[in-house]
Length: 145
Image (tube, rainbow, N blue to C red; front, side, top):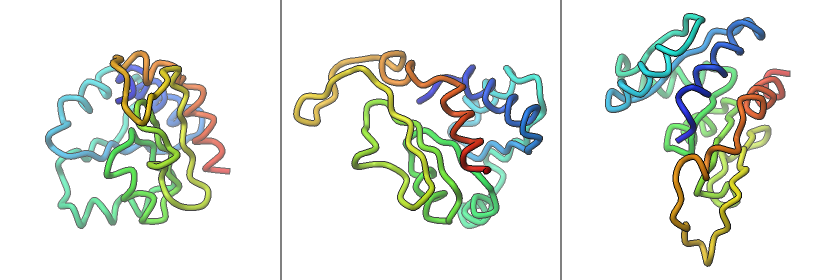
């Protein structure tokens, strides 16, 4: 998982620089994490965590211009719905797990080497740390252009 402070900074930049609405879409199980991200923000996003059914969530995602996500099932749902998708990858490589479809972007910058597909012991900082807010913000701008 990418860092909460970086998601907050990214969302603030999208709202203030690109004049876009930012929605947080997630399951109730991740409500605390999303609330942590939102508490770090200076701009006001829309928090839809746990509000919609799965079918409604799929529809909501299909109406988004860009979907930024860790390497998760909802990332693949967004890609399948035709939403421009940016996947953030740490231990898993986008070679196998990238969001499917033309125009989607995978960001993978880990320095940890894999041996025979086995993840070496590492922490979130080693896997996700190299991905900067600028990396993701530039990808969002690319998707919106």
